[in-house]
Image 1 (cartoon, rainbow, N blue to C red):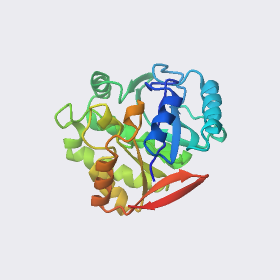
Image 2 (image 1 turned 90 degrees about the vertical axis):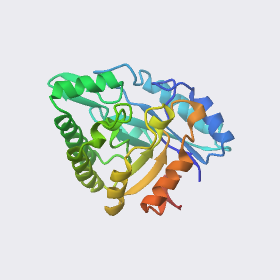
Image 3 (image 1 turned 45 degrees about the vertical axis):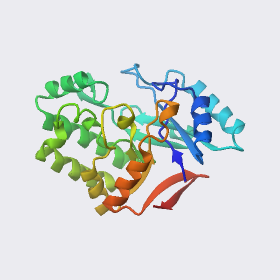
Length: 265
């Protein structure tokens, strides 16, 4: 079953229109395509949706237009600091894109330079990571989003930095410890290939080590491409499936008809 639920369009920071995404998905043989525009963040308007009403209206119309060809779902990716009205969407992806020092925000995935500024503001990378995971896991346990987005997003630029956080034993212990905490919410963790498509990583989020931890905790997973361009809907899906299977997962999950469907892999 071919699906993707983490899809961004020109309503936020995506490069393709919603209809272009749908056409590409149909041509690739998708069963379900879920849209997940970035929810509005009042403190940072650079990448999020400014016209949420227009987004809801267009996805709803396209859902009807293409209902004979593909199942379209209206979702949203909310940042943990600005929650949406959940009742208006068929699913939510819960993500954390920022760290705050007092009233100043630092985006963890905007650029390597921005990430470095955040670490400098915290004083050291371990304090930065501790704040990130602590707050994210508190949100996950309280909010219980349908999907947990790119759990270790703050490692996005590690490969560019020659190792970064992932090379630090203290960080790795912390990340795995918080993965166990997040698993208690019993949400679906996405295996996210988006940074591969954009040339930042050669492997998905979460790291293989965290995925091993999630497997031991009995967590459920799904596969998403965090797609920003119609050409990348299936970016590295075959490699990610092989990784998942090698780690020991025997299934991934899909949302269809309002229910989570288990696919044996």
